[in-house]
Length: 132
Image (tube, rainbow, N blue to C red; front, side, top):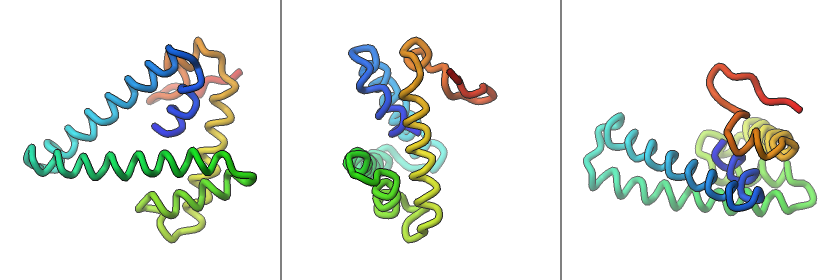
């Protein structure tokens, strides 16, 4: 979800980049909290693990961005997912389903007007998807 949101927010000008950065800040704060509190890691262990997670995550972002530039982006996304996401590694059906979801959501969100997208009125618990 973070990649899909970033992919759609970044081209939306300065406000889109600010929202994408805020999303990133919240994502990594929550990830850090989960590692230290929920998983019982100490500060040093959580810090080292977070660094590894960040490297893997940003590597995946680059791979997915590159996949979207290919002639067959859904297939390229599926291949990138198989390489970068543990729960789908080696599972062609799961990686294709994830790729199709990512592609469909990117295309859906790209059609939304800035006012909805930049206010975050497209996803959320118990909320309907914004439609145009």
